View 1 (cartoon, one colour):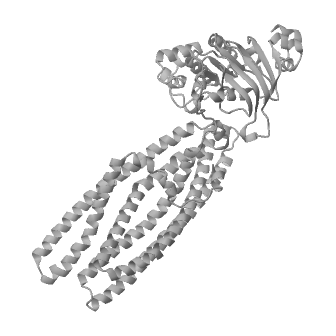
View 2: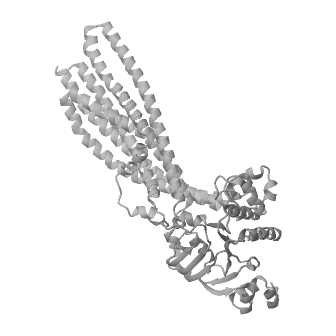
View 3: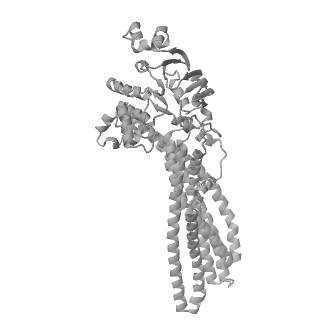
Length: 598
C-alpha cells in the first residue's frame, strides 16, 4: 500500500477528508442541528461589538445610566445565548465525530475481512490495525473539535469581515487586501503539514505492526532470549516514529506561528491607520471600537484557523490511508452473473490443467499442469514431500487464489463462475495450523454456524472427542480459550477445529494434517471421529503421517507441483517409487514386507 502511495500524485491537503462526506450525509438532522447552533453562537458573538459601539457613542456621551443598564442586560442575554448555543454545538459536533468514526471503523474492518489472501501476503496485520485505531482517532479529532472550530471560526471570520465593511469600508479595504498575503502561505504550509503527518502515521503504523507481531510471539521471543533484541528494535522503531512526528509538529508549529504573525501584524497596521482617523475626527471612538472588536474577531479566527488547518491536514493524511484500504479491490471477486451450484450438493471436485504461482513468488511455479478428479463420496489422500504443492490445492479449492491457467470445478461448475460464499459453504476445512479465537469454546466451535444451539455444538464436540476435556474446564463451553487458544494444548485445539468442521456439515471435507498435533491415544479417538465425519462425504486428506491415509480410496503422490504416482497404499508400495521411499523414511525400522502389509 505504501509503495503504491509513493507513486501517486500528491493531492491537496484536505481533499481526502472530502471522501468522508458520505458518512456525514447519513446524519443530516444532527449536522443541521450542529450547524444551526454554530450559526447562533457566531451571531451572538458578532452582536457584541454592536452593543459596545452603542454604549461608547451614546451611553457614555449622554451619561445615561438606564441606557447603560439596559445594554448590559442585553449583553447578559447574549452571553447566555452564546453559552447555550456553544454547549449544544459542542454536543452535536462531537457526537457526529464519534458516529462517523464508528461507522468508518466498522466499514473498513468489514472491507478488510473480505480482501483476498494475496493482500495479506504483502501487508502486515499490525499496520492495518494501526489504520483502524490511530488513523481513525486522528479523524475523530478532526470531525470533532477541529471541524467544529474550523466552521465556527470560518463563520466568525466571514461575519466579522462583513460587519467591518459595514462599519468602515475604507479600513476594511486595507484588511481585505492583506488577506491573500495571509491565506496563500497558510495553504502552502498546510500541504507540507499533511505530507509530514502522513509520513508520521506510516511510521507509527510500522511500529505498531512490529509490536503486535512481537507480543503475539512472546513465548518464542523468550525461548530464544530475544527480549533485548526485540526491545532494541522496537526502541529504534519508536524513535523513528518520534522523529517523524516531531517533523510534522515542527511544520504545524511553523504554520501556526506564521499564521498568527501575518494576521495580527496586518491588523495592527490597519488599526494604527484607524486611530489616525479618530484623531482627525473622520471617525467616532465608538465606531473605531466596533471596528477594533471585529478586527480582533477576524484576527483570532484566522489565527485559530491556522492551527486547525494543521490538524485537519494531519487528518487528511489519516483519511487518505483509510480510503486507500477501502479502495483496495479483492483479487478474488464474484462474477457479474454467478452460476448457481447444483442443489442438493453433489461433492464432485475436478482440477483440469491447473498451474499456479503465488503472487509474491511469480517466478516459482507451485502447481504445474495439475489434473485429477474426486468423485462424490470418495476419499482421496494427497501425499508428497514439503513444497510439493499439497496445501496449495486446498487454497485454490477454497478460492483464496485463482489458478494462473486451467480450471477448477465444484459439482460441475467452474469456481470462477460461481459465488465465492456459495463455494466456501460447501467446504469444511480442518487446517494444520488451527485458528482459535479469543472467545468462548462454544463460540469457537460455532464460528462457521452463527446461532448454533448448545446441543448442536456439544454433539459436534462429542463426535470430535472434545467434550470430555471441555467438560473438565472451569466454565465448560463458556470457558474463554484465550488469544489464539493459548490456554489449550495442540491436540485440544485440533479437536475444536474438527468439531467446527463437523458442525458445519459441508459436503466436501478438507483435512490438512488434521491429526498432526495429537498424541497416539488422541489420534486414535479423533481418527474414529473423522471416520464418521468422512462417511458419505467427499474428502481430501493431506498427510505426512502415512498411517492416516491407509483407508483412502486413492492416494495421489505429488512432487514439484504435479502428480507422479496414483493408487492404493499396497499398489504404491509395490511400485517402489516416491511413495515407497516416503514410507520407508517414516517407517525406517520396518522392511518392505512389513510396509506392504500395513
